[in-house]
Length: 224
View 1 (cartoon, one colour):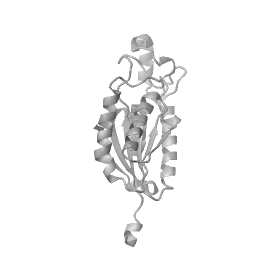
View 2 (cartoon, one colour; view 1 turned 90 degrees about the horizontal axis):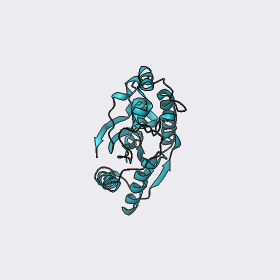
View 3 (cartoon, helix red, strand yellow; view 1 turned 180 degrees about the vertical axis):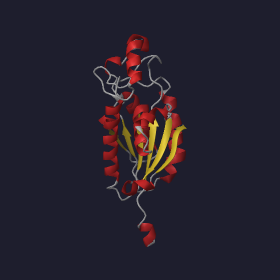
View 4 (cartoon, rainbow, N blue to C red; view 1 turned 90 degrees about the vertical axis):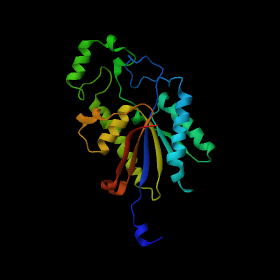
């Protein structure tokens, strides 16, 4: 290998995947409510495994051990564990790590309630100050973003210590993915809700921790 090739900065591939449908009525407010994935879970695993096999596995070297990072909430853990089992069937050594700070926003007393039960008055109070409103016994969107971003920066610091390229699959929530993308794209937090993050979608980032200006957003909200 030439000296110029050796001097190239290490680039890591990160795939941010949102979990699938959950076993709750669409009218229910949920963030840290620990609900399970809908009965289509097996189909979700099959679709995700097909994507991994086609888009990720071919680029893995013999020295690259993929890492799965997940929210500890069940709806992400179910998908992450299913993916881990699939990769092991492909003779891939794979680690699974849960990061507490990657939980969805805490809606506090709103968790598990329908929007009708929450009431129009409270909803309007929230809409008047979307990012600063503190959900009763929960957190604000601004505090949530700070929590996620702190964990994200810690992950980048860890990646910067790796000399070999890493492949990381993150199974997360819509709010967490938006928060990471907002930080990565240097967007104002107030614009984060403009980022569409569908269930069972993937956003791909090529990260150069030593020179973040060289990092690239390869795709956002790609349907699996």
